[in-house]
Length: 178
Image 1 (spheres, rainbow, N blue to C red):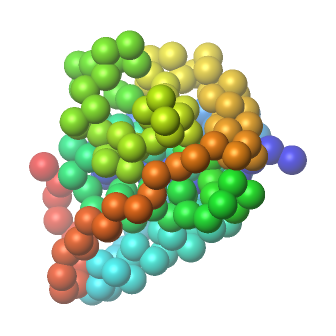
Image 2: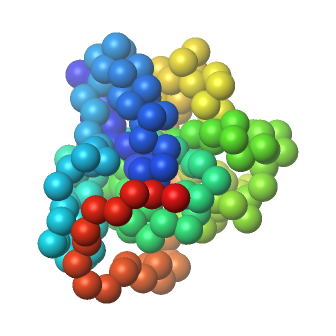
């Protein structure tokens, strides 16, 4: 059976997420994500975060799409924390896919514009995250997932002790993204 994949993304990158879903489904992976047109109007932000976390718990691997603004999104932080939770036999694999719009690359990465939990886990001490470029993901997706699954089952240390980014207060109402 193929791995079950959750896609974490900033809705500004919805078109890329849609392409990634298509690629994963072509390769017979079970894919979960929260679509940008999902109706959340009137729900509390914490309730929405819990919906995402519940989806992650049913998956083996999380793929986080890293665009220009992803690092500042609190829901992405909550999703990555849920991905890294637990021991080596419980946590999920994690792949970070860098978008070209960022202006950096795997060999010259601007870690300051990565979600903090991903920054923490792509160092020499905590080498858990599989890092990929969007431009090459079509050719690398199966290998990246295999690598994430391998790291997931190994006893590799992860750093997941940061406090959570604070979710917005109140209720969610659809707004255009900027």
